[in-house]
Image 1 (cartoon, rainbow, N blue to C red):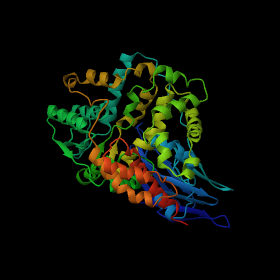
Image 2: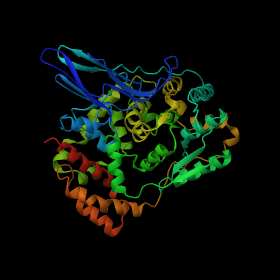
Image 3: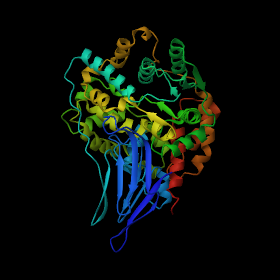
Length: 487
């Protein structure tokens, strides 16, 4: 993994060790507004020049202390190089409840991700990292029908700029985003040689929809099984997502499969900007014109992807629980939400720059970093249209489906994945608590003693509802090891 350390000597000179040049991701010619998804640096011998794309979707990590700046494409490399391991409890108070970090946070107070439009400057006091401010999108003032027509046309143009010259395999689910990409590629005479889906109990309905789409289009559909060792999967996911995501373990098998069969693929990242908010119009309005506190509370109440506050009381040690109270999470969320209150859709803007950028993007740009992954919805034209849509235009949740029905009417009768799914996960839920028992015994600083009997009880009574804590327990056990590695 690329990394570089730049230091200022006592006589004012800059010295560097590590990789002088790093280029990650892909980029397009400057005349093309998309830009691509990339992160890179170059050491000229006298200065370090850093560059990220407009969204900073491809993660680079930085640690600045005194006259030393360390940059790496893997968070653990900075810890290996001696970055302090003190935890960032403000950041973790959010992550433990939502499953993603906000802003440029990581688990460690000394390490951050490079922000959008990052630059590195050296002053008399040492290195200083700055970011290009992200301006709110302009409000779209046309009709819903016109917005749908614009959306269809802009996605077509975005796909046209990303046509693969070589055969490729496309991940496909039952969602609007991957379906739209597939239809646009087929219409552009650039169909994938196959589509692939992960077939596990949680995605069976998703896989069935993908198979039906492929059958209608005459494209082979491949089903791959997830890897069986859930404890190892969680550990591998945490490592490959730089300890910045609670999700994506189920995608390890997909990422490994794509690495072996294709050099190029496509991802629907940011396509969910075309979805309605899970919060009602009244809920969203309560955050407008305020300081963001009300919206922070609603996000904590609705958006928790990890575990509940009640579960955290069992999951965490008493000292860790004291460090990450809900009030701390609310304060950190509020400070981030304030940056989005002037956006046409504050909740959508917050979600894109945080959940999408810091969480969802780790699937294509961390797990699948060995493959060139195009994200058509990140094209500037597409993004600015979707980011500017007012909330009432999206409130029914049908905007993207209506666009697909208009653009591809002969395929409009293929169903979508169910919005609410239930699957029998009892066998998996029993295995993971059994595997995690050793983790609980080795992470006393972060995990609570009440977890061990709960894990044993789950194995004995097969209660599939209890062990929502298990993946996070694995995460905390690894985090405990990292915090002690340089001591």
